[in-house]
Figure: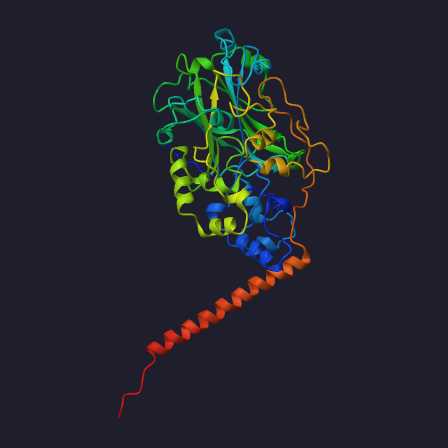
Length: 457
């Protein structure tokens, strides 16, 4: 199977004061922060889901907050969101508002579900319509139909949508591979099923904004529908209101899956032109947390192993970050050691973390169970109370996403103040001078070792 991986996003929100135990007023801590973020290893730099945290790389820390080539290149392949929800014969969301999330659905209620909608979004924060540079990327949507999922632990059910007792056995039974032209139309699409338990993979109808008609979809209710295009960003998060994304939307009939299928695992990935994965998305907004960043280059079957190894033998920068009080960003919680996949089960009503509806306020839902980063950052808008709904209504029918916003100027991102630029410049300059002196001294030693000595007369 192709690898799975991911990368950082182009926006940057620095740590808020009450999230840190240390005082950022001291020059020592400022220096530590500047150097820590400047030299963070790549394993801590990738991020997920239109992430509001942008860990700068190299000398980009001295920029003026405006988009630059480095940030643009990293954003180009980024995944933003993954949504999975059931739809009925009318193509609309099957939601049973009166049904508690932990109460089993009745057979008649399950029978209303005729298809699963999968919405996979990439390229966050777009403000200019295509053409875009999409030629270097391949996008994958993976579905595991056979991994065992348990629903008997209330805490894991609430946080993750269930428990996966054998994470090392996670393997895709269905893989959707998509390459796009620069205008967001489909260049290539294939659906494979190594286990041969998925049906109608050869019956895929492809649409875009110009060709999509609901009448065409209604004529083939048992076939797979694929839409790709340029749409309004569906993430309910003020920082990204008014921006757009590149979308891939699948409508897969239940009849394509094995008879009696109840539980699914989903995840997505972006692969670069070198064939390596650099971006991963599973349970929405998980890998955007810095402590999970390292998962972006691994398939889900390796996630628990990788997390345990990092917890037991942390990288230097992770250790220093926790040492200096950034526990909320880099310290692992007891419940963290699970694979980053999205669980959906038709045993229960849909709603994050059981799948994800377009209108789920995931920032608040995550905060309820211990991950408050997104919730806190959602208050960066001056509006009060915080926005809990999207800024442009979703469509009730396939492809569900709203039409794109018109082109708009790119807003400048945050940058270091002139004073702090001087401080960081002085620190880095001093280090470079030390390195230079050390190199000169080392070279002098080497030369002295090989210098010809006069032969005693």
